[in-house]
Image 1: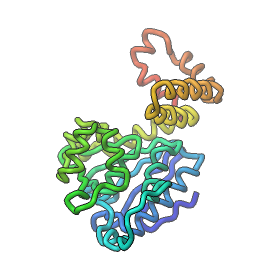
Image 2: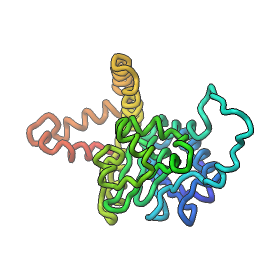
Image 3: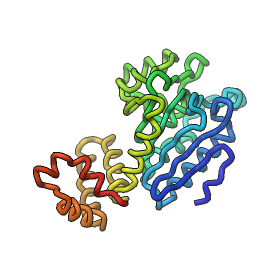
Image 4: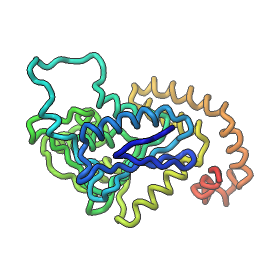
Length: 277
């Protein structure tokens, strides 16, 4: 893949891509940045060599601010609102992030708001910085609503009542509360987040690609009714069994001391040894 953009840098290391967004001064989602993010998600989805993507910002104070309000003011309003049969382009972009067969991780060191928050809410994992990461859905104070997945994704992340507080209150959600509510997986000191997220991303990228891809697909199936999700899980489990990485790593697991008392007492470390060198 080319990954040639003006406002986004993509560094690929093995099966891991690290995406760094830079649109000074505050990483507003301008039409140009939105176009690049949309095209990037298409490229990432098509790239069969990757299993993990980390999104971060070149500015530690701003991950993604929100969609450009000046651009929103140019949206046509001369006709009545209509209900579309298909996803909007922004919704489609967020769904590509949610459903692509790669683990998607947001390293949110500063502020994320509006459409930026909706974008990261569609990712698989989000990590923040103690005392610094802030989340804000600022649409209702402007007289609109979060129209880029926010009203649908947030209730699934934090629950209906907390989503209502975030959406209707329009106030900052601090890192500590965001972690407690489930918006952020974990929070770190500013000088620790980069190393921890990088280590996690490389660990996942070292595991058999088929297992990573199908495990994500199976977790996504949890949004279906339980019986349907269980049927899908059983099917995807069968598919992983037939992949070469499963047979190789299960045999290696036994050789490294799996199913022994000593090995199982350090199974997290043992699992790390199953990854590619």
